[in-house]
Length: 407
Image 1 (cartoon, one colour):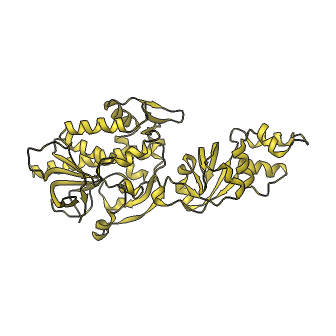
Image 2 (spheres, helix red, strand yellow; image 1 turned 90 degrees about the horizontal axis):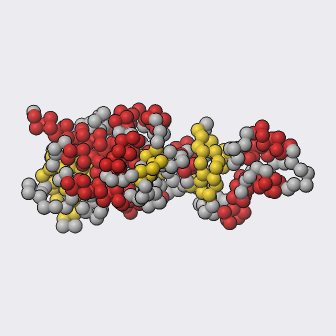
Image 3 (cartoon, rainbow, N blue to C red; image 1 turned 135 degrees about the horizontal axis):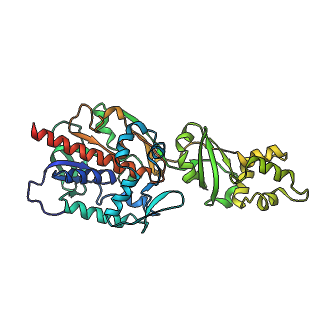
């Protein structure tokens, strides 16, 4: 993607800013429509956050029916037409077309067989190169938002101007600033009067102060639990940390926890309250509570420690014990810092864009990816929506350039 150009090096049909999944997908779609395309990336290499996200296993998407999949997004109405055009099955086809076989885990999460992001990214960059897409590294877009075809960038060699028929901004959210998602793009948007919703840390640990009793369990997972916040449920696991709690079950309910910082944890979801009540009623008098919880209720040491921490002083009556085990109260004091977050909620309001993801009042400028105001938990939803919005914006930008050429 860094090959020598035979046409002017600063003129393109479509210019994409941001080389994450949304930007690369937008570039591919525009190039497939016959556009001359460049991707400008502020960092020395593309898709750094994508590579980091895949370090422990690249969760591409989730095997769910469309309506069930959509329910995990807060902006489901705006995203519905986009995700219906490019959903989980399409993500699988996308990966396989790049030579990356996938498999579905026990929870429905879909991963490349190799688990890593780097082979997929290398194959994708090679395909973009074959389509003639130009990658411009260390090019940071500086604004302003304008209908002018000329766009300004800071580079190691100074300021440069690039000309394009359409501009696609895929600038990410405001987490993991060291990888490029620093939210600096908000300044020119604010200057242009664009409606922005404040960024909030999403898919991030929640803070809680623990007693010394919990110190030996820092870093330990709490498996096979069901968590409830404001009527919303999440089944899975989380990790006890020195600062609080983190992990999939927490992330799935993060939106609710930001509003209502109290969760109820069912530490034994495999047992009904009725069954548990019977077990407690039949408990032998000489059997200590800790031993009963270990042998009969099957709570491991971490779960037992958490139960005593959250339910202190521990109830001794049957109903109190059932309530403590089936609805242990976990209070939190807010999310960890944004730069620890996997993603962010907030960003550019949907009121600012047309159904084609073009900025209202700034014809020819499109937006895609996490900079738009949508939120979803981990589990493949983030990558899928980034790819889908990039695809949508890339096609719309190509249509826009073609329509101008015909006018």
